[in-house]
Each structure stands twice: as structure tokens, then as C-alpha cells.
Image 1 (cartoon, rainbow over the protein chains, first blue to last red):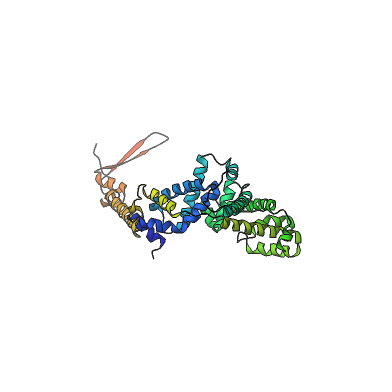
Image 2 (cartoon, rainbow over the protein chains, first blue to last red):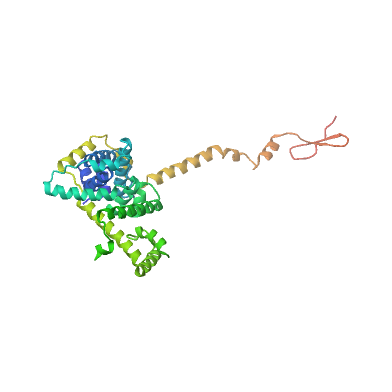
Length: 188
Length: 160
């Protein structure tokens, strides 16, 4: 079983089959990250297409001592920001998230459950700024450490902590709208 | 720490974001302050639930779509292998080559000035001269006295 770096070398030597093996562990992660950031599955897939192109094109710049996962997520986040910037979606991001339906091809009952969950997530994430959202999704969604998150987003650890704190505060406030009862009672 | 300070730290209590000493202080406070405890529980619950929902609502590619996206990426210009193919001594050799160049340049440019006999430029200049003169000028009277020496710095008599 080849490690990630050997797979990278394989791809660069012309073995394109290794590209798929290399990206297999991250295919879901990058899609979900782009999906949460754009709020729409089709747009997320567009972002991922762009991300994969960049990964393939710049694979020779990947350094052995770096983490491939971090590198892939950095490219994903940059592509997402580029996409959002290009389409000028920062301002109406929240509205889009609310209005755009996602066709998942599931049966109606499951669709309803999924819709409910998506609405809850949207409620929780809608007040977050793009930076807070990306910090929250990387740290709490994908499980990256503060240091890794700061490297991926190209900011300081202090900035990550600040944004993470604000994001959790906002989520906690929004969560209260979904479950408008006292937390003391929820725990019992 | 008072409740205000504790509540500022609560959002970061769910992970290793704050130092152990502070975590211990916050935990000690939570033991005796039910209001802050409730606030902390609210954070924990909201975070756990949000994570749960994110997991439940996670998306995946259909294989057909994934293959299409991969093929799309591969159509792009292939990256150059030469940049990445690891050669661990690449840098060392580059530095060694630079060092050799510096040494050669030093030998070519600096060395010839030392090849000449003697150590200093002044001495070399003196050695080349047949007659050396030394002039003293009096500031008061303006009288000039000129001495002439031969190569061995012996006073040379000049017949006028």
C-alpha cells in the first residue's frame, strides 16, 4: 500500500489512476466543506471541480513534509472564497441558503427529514460570517486543530480562537431559537 | 474569576483551545455557580447537536459524478514531474557548487595582487622606483628642502 507522497509521485510520473486513489479519502470532506460554505450542492460541486483542477495542476508544488489533507483543504477553502467573491455572494449568501432547494434524489419522507436537518443547520450557521463559518466547519466539523485551521486559512491561531468563540456563541444563540426552552431542562 | 470572565471563556471550553490552568479555574467556578453551569451546558448541547446535524446532512458524490469531475481535472495540463521527483541532495549540491564558484572567483580576482613580491602595495611601488624623494616645507618661511634616496634608502648625493 503506497503512502500519499508515493501516490503524488506516481501521478507526476504519469500514472493518472493514482490521482483517484489519492483523493478518495477527501472526496466527501471537500464536497461537504464547499456545500456548507456555498449553501448549495450544485455550486459546491462546481467549487470541487475547480479545486480538483487546481490540485492536479499544482501537484508538483506539494512538499513531502507538508500534510496532504491540509493542502487539499487549503485549496478547497481558497477555491470556495474565489467562487463566492466572483459571484459576489457574500452579501446574499444567507438568503440563497434559505431559498435554494437541494434535490438529493431521496424518497419524500427522507427528503422531509433531510430538509428539517438542513433548515436547522442553516438556522445555526446563517448568522456566521464566512470566516467564522470556515473556522467553525474546519475545527468542529472536520476536526482540524486550531493550528491546522490557522494554516489552512492563512491566519493566526489567535484569530482562529476569536472567530471560533464568536461562531460558537452565535450558534448557541441560534440554537435557542430551535429549542426555545431552558437548557437546564434539556439536560434532565 | 468572576462570572463575566468565565462566560467569555465558555465557548472555548469544549476543546483544547484554552490552557489547562484556565480550564481548571473555569471548572471550579462551574461547580459552584449554577447559572454559568447552565450556560456551559447550553454551549455543549448546541455544539453537539450542530455536529450531529452536520454529520446527518453530509453529502457524497455519486460515483458517476466523481469520475466525471476527476476526468475533468485530468484533462488539464499535467504537472511537471521534475519539480517534485525527490532528490534529497539537490540543495546540498547547489550550495557546494556555489562554494566552488566563490573559491574560483576569489583565486582569479583577488590572488594576483598577492602574487607580487612583498606584502603591501606601498612596498611594491617603492621597489619599482629608482629614486625616491622626500620634501619638507617650512610653514613659516616657505623654505623647501628636498632629499633624494636610492633604492636602499641611502641618501643620494646630487651634483648640481
